[in-house]
Length: 293
Image (cartoon, rainbow, N blue to C red; front, side):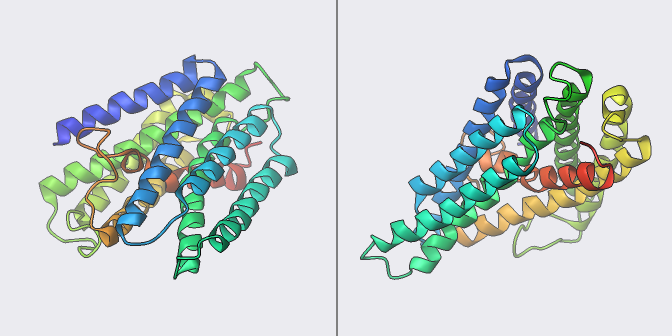
């Protein structure tokens, strides 16, 4: 089980990072938009299994537009009011469209639940996943379109993925070997306090080690060895919360995995659940604490 999980994780994220680093920019957009859309579709399927009605087509359309438009703005260096205004506009239209669509459903006895579930999906998956694009283009493109500072945003994405996935692996292995005390058994019976501590420690070490591997690029974002250690531990904690958040949703619907695309992992939502929380946390740290451009 662990071998399958590890292999699927390594293969999938090698493809993602390979596209981010080596392929033309539109390829990374295409992959992120595809992953985000598939994960949102899986979430809506889980919600339906919980006997809640959802506007699946409308939500996935809004999520795809959000991911695509934001990539365009951030790729071209528009990281000021326009880019964030676009996000606000899409989310506002998603809410308004959900109201209009629900008005046409004469046989829907619980329209509030339908609208809430639909918008929740857009925010939880598409909006949070979009922070990977923001990290990728943390520096405005008009500053140095082909310069090193723009390129270092890719290393921030690499840092994010490595720390998050090492945290997942560390929590899993430590929990299997040393786990005795359950963390929140009603949500995720397999998670333990020992595994949680192990995941955070491994994440901190992974962050520290990644800094020394890619020091030149990460330093341009304001990172130091101490920052990398602290951020690694922070992402370890936040990643575990992200994993528990998806477990809470799946528990209500009575499903084990969000899909069956990836052996040992499950679906796309299972692949990115931790990143949905760690990506915004890293972006906030870079912008507010390190004050990256």
